[in-house]
Length: 464
Image (tube, rainbow, N blue to C red; front, top):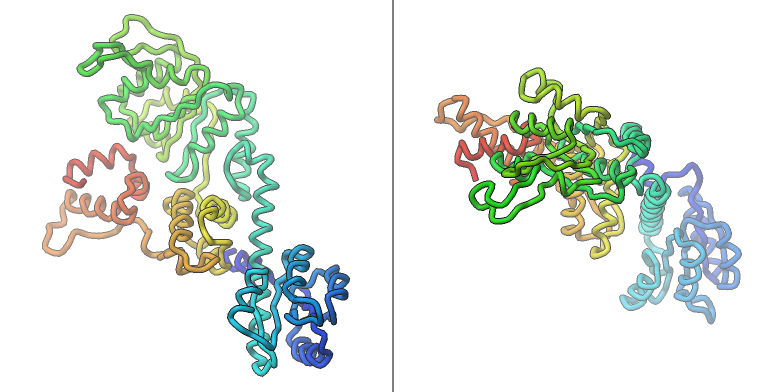
């Protein structure tokens, strides 16, 4: 699949590439024709500017353009070609090659220039083939952009880019929920876009005019989860100098997104279950409960059914949340989405960048990469590559991907340190944090634990 994607991006077509030679010297045209036809090029001719326009209806892949056409300037012809055939690459031919003329041609839209006489046959052919590759890359990038635009009518609601069957099924489920207000449980690895799907569910629901309130249960310290969710009254605890409504009441009439729901302690799970059942919350320090009208979309990177069997998650809460279940596939299981996503992220950053596209070999590398951090990792990769790239297209070197560097940590404690469970655990934590470059969310995903668990274990081992 990676090879096929790179083959498509290279723009290989089942026809001979067409070259329009624009020169008023018949000997030059004849020489180039004899040179290029054995190399597989279809050759067309135009002897002056007036005869160029009819030939452009052929939409040639390349134009070999003499810079001197009688009284006409080749620079003016470049502008016409660019307007009529934006995908056609232009190579200027001149017997007066200077740096100034080359720069002028490039600014006008030419791909390269060749100096007459053509003593180096190989350089001529190689220049044309590089121009063809550049054209194919530009066409393919534009096709990808067009595909993004065509999908925007449907996926604009969802806010994501995709073409894999797995993600298309997810989008269809979101659209099927448009008139439904049932609770939803989303299960997926970190970085797959759980919050994007939750926002899409909200935006397509009857609650779209209400608030969407996201809560990262894994990032809330255990001691304040209850007050954050349910609110509190003044004086309810030390430091409560004024009352706070809590996130449930902030989401009243809308959607409450409980990310990493598997990180909630059992006691809080019991209180959350009561709120869902009774549709009311009791703020800390309050005498009476307050009614709330909230739809809950929960998400987790854990297998909650296993957590239920292990006694770490309440089964009654699980079934209250799992009225509708959505499983998001990881990025490594939907390689069809990688080129589209990469271009999507590149479009975001290239407003302030010179980058215009991605080389086919780089696309192949992106497709082959395992992406433990999923879509978030891909986005970070493209942003970093665009910031550091030296050329107009991202290359394999710009991506900086080492297929062996992002695997799950497997290190043992250094020699001389006893192989105890504690030492091995600390070593795994250090490895995960190093591979994730300090990103706690990614490190937790690598280790298969929640962030609150990772924070606790880091504290136990004295890791900052």
